[in-house]
Image (cartoon, rainbow, N blue to C red; front, side):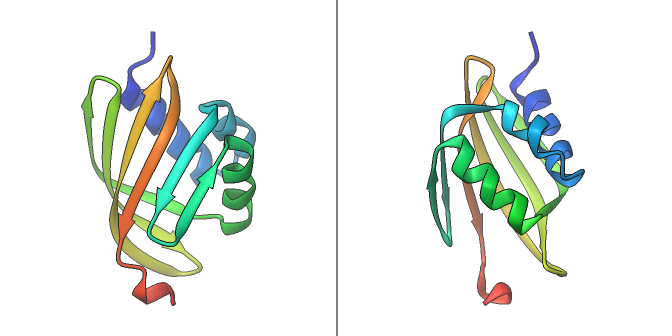
Length: 108
């Protein structure tokens, strides 16, 4: 069985490579995203947005505690780099929720 941290690393790697099929397969269908700029309900809706936004991640540190994974990283969006953190929760080996926290002012 794959660890929660490994699953999250695979997800981020797929996003960085713009492999939305692989990334989407790591999400639970009822995936929930909560971020500073809004929320998304459902893996399909979230992956559609990620395909448009093409956010890249530079991981500084990953912490794993059971089915919880915290990633401290840089988000790179449209040439702007923003420091932040993401809290992933997994259910049955798939990412079921994600909370992202960062200062959005450089993007606005």
